[in-house]
Image (tube, rainbow over all chains, first blue to last red):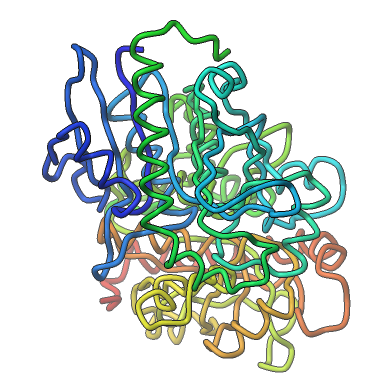
Length: 240
Length: 240
């Protein structure tokens, strides 16, 4: 792996990793887009972190921003692998705890794209875009495995929840599905690494729990990402 | 207007217009993306229609596909204006009927991006990305005006409906918000032209009504788009 590219939505999620590797902000790399590039060379290999950027002082989040960022990152950087690092909600009933870090297990689904019940349209809505096989990596690095499910909202309606449960979603985020969609079109391998900020079945409001745990989860995310970078740069991992 | 670019999701929506102008399919114009380009020269001016393309034999629809298509169209074609033409759901209670054709009135909102109630986050979720001022054009061409509202589903939950009503949405589609987001980043003017296929408060299932009326609405859409092309190519319209 000569060129690694992280796709991260929020500065709070990225900052610990940017500092860990002393990455440089490359100004205006993506032209008219708000997308931001942080770059460094680690042991002769290129490490990139691409962020959605900000609008009105807030981190751009969600699927449209993630789609755009991933397309720009792939077209400009042509990375060997994409890693979508971020925070997520997860299910206490499926064994998750705040601060747990997971790798993506199998394809990434969407839980809020209801475009019909017939086979083809149902499948297009759910997406299920592929990720690289991270099972050996999870074992080697002591990380959990879970199926990512993406939606455009921080909260979750009963309709969303029913789709998540029916389709086997475990890690609820706001970007992975969009990133997996674009990565799959360009055939760039993708791993998602997700740190739990809130328990969607824990009885507390997502927004409150998310902000309370963001700092702690971002630190756990940084530790996992550091191990992943080391692993990808030194091992010949079996991902495909 | 020397270079016009339509962004259209479905072949059924685009085909009447492609035939009307005898546009040529430019194969593989967008490289690894499924995005399709149809192009022609009309009175010395360039007319482009860009489609999301297909996956597993079905038209790609929704916000991720629309984001990608718009980014690719802007970066490769650098059009003077984007026109998002498509079908939509609308409210009988607000005076809409099947086959009515509307132009976008003011910014485009999202009704399924719930990312917080606080001012900045609420606003980011709703989006409200700008469109060009189409009021004079609507008057000159005898078209209606309405506020576009976008979501990733063909149906609508009560949660979606409440947001649409609260924020004043009138024309419910699955792409305009994403297209307006990307267009606004690149400062390319955008007009949405939407033909009504289903009445969201008409008491019938959206999917059934949509498929029943798609052909008729696409014909009405073609007639309106033909008038718009003529208008943009011959007049000096006041849009900004």
